[in-house]
Structures are given as structure tokens and as C-alpha cells.
Amino acid sequence: MKKFIRVLVPLLLAVLIIASIGWYLFTYDRGFTRDFLLTQARYNDLHGNSRLSSWFYDLAYNFSNHDENVAIELANLYKADDNYTKAEYTLTNAINSEPSAELFTALCKTYVEQDKLLDAVSLLDKITNPDIKAEIEAQRPDAPISNYEPGYYSQYIDVTLYAAGKLYYTTNGEYPSVKDPVYESPITLPAGETTIYAIAVDDNGLVSPLTVLGYTVTGVIEEVKFADPAVEATLRELTGTRDGDSVYTSQLWQITEFTVPEDTKVYTDLTFMPYLEKLTIANQDIDSLESLSSLTKLTSLDLSGSRFSPDDLTVIAGLPALTELSMVECGLSTIEKLSGAKSLTYLNLGENTIRNLDVLSSMTTLTELNLQHNAVTSLDALDGLSNLQTLDVSYNALTTLAPVSSCARLTTLVADNNQITSLDGVSSLQVLTRLSVNHNALTDVSPISVCTTLVELDISNNTLTDISALSTLVNLERFSFASNQVTALPDWPEGCKLQTIDGSYNALTSLDNLSKMEALTYIYMDYNQISNIDSLADSYCLVQVNVFGNPISDVASLREHDIIVNYDPT
Image (cartoon, rainbow, N blue to C red; front, side, top):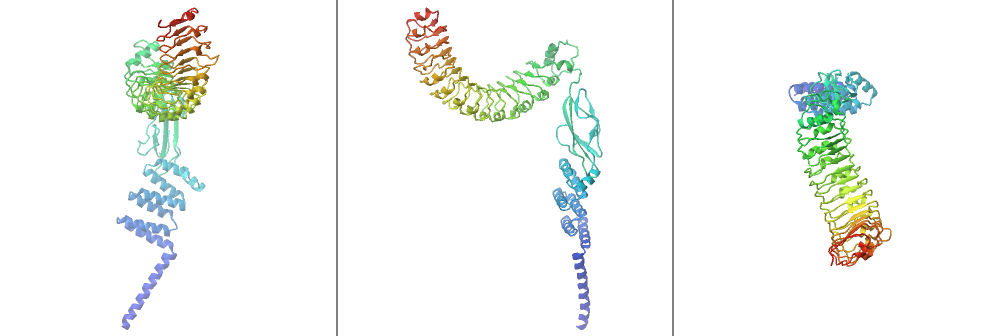
């Protein structure tokens, strides 16, 4: 027993001494601990145990006072395991804890390896530490430069780019990608506008700042190669160029208005007329309107009767100078992709099947809008169009005009052939001069009694019986209330400017209230219950009175004043 104890005690002491030394080293010699943990991490990595290796790397990083080299080694392990998210996380945390140029370089390289060039550029551009910034800039490739300064050119140019490392570029407006072909030869610029985006990527993983180069090639004089014979024939006639003779681009620059011939099949020849201001393409089947995108000076476009894809509305909306657009009878059921057209002042969408007008709410520059013959049920989208002056919504399915109350500049409102039952909202239109609401379901017109600026009013073909409230409309010159059930005329005061009145097909018995109308020239009162019109004899401006279908027997007093009277003698 004593012998066993004599052997055991030294062994226990040896173990205790070794454990004490280990505890001391792990606790007080962090460098030793880090190296031990790194050794274990590398051993496990070498033997394919990536999870255990990552765990040892994490421990080593914490024991190393956030040694950047350990963080980079751990990130590389994650990348080798195709876990770039953890690699980014590791390097980002290390930068937040103790930033260094090496960590920024490692993270930038990690971004590049994932084709995140935008993130890589942003990372380096936003370094705030001046010392690290200076160190990175010394290693970072310079921004690419070109042999041509950005600007306008009247000749075709080949742009050569210069940069250290691999150079990636685009000309389609997208950010460069390492998936794009590496720049090798000069870039030949086409006519029009081109923007080059370029980034250099060095072997050290750092990227250059982004270079943006904008060029406009215009005014290049060259022979025109026409794509469509119909367009060619029309342009030869316009320029006075005989068949067989060359047509040059400079000749077509003089054309500011053009109507595309109806047998046109290809529309790319329009790009030869960059100074077009007014263009008509009527009654045609158009495969694509993409050729219009180069017409940056176009202010007026008429596509009436033509058929094209609703997707082409995006091209139209992108025309920067466009102020007038007509798309009558184009088979449109939606105009959603016209939302980018922010400068339109005139828009004609008549004779389509449009129902939703939401896209119009952003077209605040509109002064004239035509929506006749569509499927519109609500005008709510027009609520904010404060510049609107003329509005035609005839032949739709409206029941109210209330949303137009905010269109304070409206002078002309045409809403014929709807299902309107009320004129509420119209009373807010204090500069309205023309209102037409014939063929609706109106029973009351009193809301418009305050619209004293009205010059022309048509309320015919409704179910009205009383229009006496309109006696306030002293500026009326043309007034129609035909085909209603009206029994009496308004009692207009003297000085009323009425020139023409049509009250045919009503239940009137007297026209005496018209005797005070000094400017009255034409009266249409067919098919009423009028028996005497002698009171009109002294209307010295009166030219003609139509009273067919009334029980009138004597018109001598009017004819004595050379007034034409059309009636059925009884």
C-alpha cells in the first residue's frame, strides 16, 4: 500500500503541476492560448471538420483581443465553406470593434467575390478614419478615365478607358458587374445619349471609385439608310430629293412636323428626325413605339386610330418635352403605364374602353382633357387637377360631377350622355363659361344658378320641369333646354345677353319673358303649347323664330318687322 502511495503522489503532483501550468498559460498568456486554439482550428479545417474549426477560430479571435488576422482567417474559412453571409458578418463586426485597412480590404474583396461592386465601392467611399482612408486610397485603383471628356459631340467617337486592374463597364444604365466582359477595346458610341459606368477591380481585392461618363452624339452628317420604303418616299418628297440620290441626315434635321404614311411597316426611320416637334401616326398597327424614345424635342403626338401595346405607353411617358397627346380610338382599356407623363397639358383619350383614371391624378399640368366615349364611372382621380380648363366626359357611365369641384380653373365642362342625377360640385366652378349636360337624368338645375359666368348652357334631354333658378345667368348667349317638361321660362332681367335659345319639345305656353332680350336673334320653340308670339315683334335683333307644332295662327306682327317665322298655320 505504501509503495502504491509513493508512486501515486508524485503522479498527482506532476498532473497538478501540468494543470497549473496549463491554467496559467490559458489564463495569463493569451498569445499561447490563441496559438493553441488556432492550431486546433487549422487541424480541424485540414481534416474537413469546418464546424469545429469555426468554433476554435471564434475562441481564438476572442482570446486574441480581436486580432484582425484571426478575423480574416475565420472569414476565409466561412468563404471556403460557401457561407459568405457569415464571412461578411465576421469582418463587419471586426471593423466595428477595431477597424483596420486589412479588414476593409478583406471585406471589400468578399463583396467583389459575390459581384457586389456597389457595396464594395460604398464601403471604401464611406471610410471615416483618416489614417485608414489614406492607407486604402494608396492601395486602391484610381477611378477609370477616358480619352474623351464627357459632353456633346457632332461626330461618332470611340471612347477608350484607362484604369489599373480589371475594368468593368456598362452603357445600359446598370451598375457594372464582374459578370460583364472585361474591358478590352474602345467603345463606339451610337447617335444619341450614352452613359458609361466604369469600375476597376485590382488583384488585391480593392475597387476604384465609380466613374460616370455622359456623352451625347448628335449632328453627325451621314447618308441615311432607310428601313421603310413608304417613309423614304414621303421624306424624299419633303426634302425634294430624287430617287437614286442620297438623302443626308442634315436634310432631315430641318423637319419639325411629320405625318407617317399609313402603309408604313417599320418606324425606325423616325430616329433620323431628332428635331421633330409634332408627329402623327394615325390608323396603323404598330409593333413597337420604341423608336420614339430618341425624339427628345417632340411636343405633340397623335396616335389616333392606331393599335399598339399598352406597354408602349411607357415609351410615350418618357418623352421629356411632350405636352400634347392624342390617342383617340386606340383600343385602350388601361393607361396605367402613362404615369410618367408629368408635363402633359392636352390629353385626348376619346373612344376607348378606359375605366380607371387613377394615373391622371399625377398629371397636374393638364389644361385640357377629353375622355368621351369610354367606360368611366368616377371622376375622383381628377380631384387635384387644379389647372384643368376644358373637360369632356361625354358618353360614359357617370352619375355625379362632384369631384370636379376642385378644378377651379375649369371653363368648359361637357358631360353629355351619362347618368348624372345631380349638378352638385358644379356650383364651385366660378369661371365656367360652357356647360353641356344633355341626355342625362337631371331633375334640378338650381346648383348652377351661381355660375353667372356661363355663356353657353345645354341641359336638353333630361327630366326638368322648373328652370326658373336660371334667371341669374345674365351672361348666357346660347341656351338649350329642349326635350324636357318645362312649363315656364326664367324671368331674366333686362340686359341679358341671350342670342340663341332652344326650348323645343317642352310644355311652354308663353314666350313673353323673351321680349326683354335685346340681343336675341334665334328662337327655337317647336312642339310646345304656345298660341301667341306677338310679344316678340319688337325684338329688333330677332332674325328667326321656329314654332312648328304649336297652336299659332297669326304671325303678321313679326313678319312686318322682317322676322322669319317657321310655323304650322292653323
